[in-house]
Length: 412
Image (cartoon, rainbow, N blue to C red):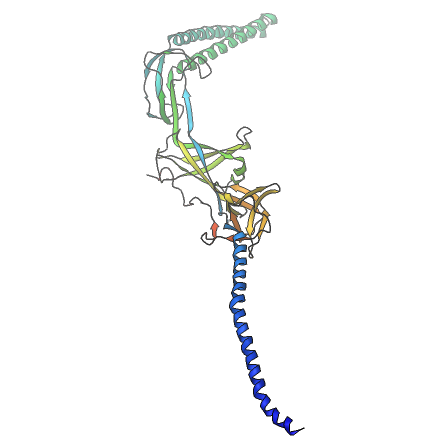
């Protein structure tokens, strides 16, 4: 290499270094300018895209299914009646001589309530006694005659034909006497009906006649009118119509109690006694009869009561608010929000109706987020956003209390 080349080499290194530094500086300036202008735009674009997607997603409120109560409870109106209740009518015609029991009077079985003056019946009874006496005398004479003729027949003093006639006459007189005695007994029984007596222990709830009133024999289907009305209220019958869809809970395991508006906060124990065993084809309900101990007499027959029935639930289900249901052509559905915000539509099977809530027997597992008030525009696969100000709470229906009931005689 020439000396001139060797001398030039050391001088070129600083120049290259300066050019490299200048290039790096230009690149740094350009990179800074690029970063300052492009990256914010990219970030703003991404933010805009995210906000646009969020704005396009439907905001929904959700609720989680809750388990149904262990007891199936039902509250129905009940018809309270006395265990024994009967109108008292007259059996004979006449005039009311006197009455002994007024409205509200407790009476015992067989107690005299009123007396009827029926002279025609008394006269007929006296005539029947006279006819019976005549028949008895005729029979006695026919009997003695027949016995004598039978004795004479043994000695061949009379003919067999004549003896048979005397025996037959005795038998005819005996039948006449029996008829007279029967007529006397009938009229004696009819005369006893002039005394109106209580058919059972109870309370007189109505008295419809007064002294001197004309009494006609008869019943509700005849010309007579009701004299008294008796009610035995120490034990009550309560009738309730259980809807067909709840009739499966009726059985030995069912518990019952009553509440009455005149005794707020008090409950009266009742026992399921019997049921009709058939659904009424008009009301589509099962008639159930309850027995209530009313020894204290606090519950009055004829009162209105609310009957509370409860029975163990055969199969536990889930409950949801009624406003979560969607009615689509394929059936009843609910909208479920997945973990990724993706919406799915599920068919469900409905059970009991609790009013504001319904029972779901099939279609859900229990941990889903179910959309409340779903719109008709929601479709499977849509992305939704759960509202932040609407907390996800379980759907729990109101259930009645299950504390033990008190008897009518204890609730004082």
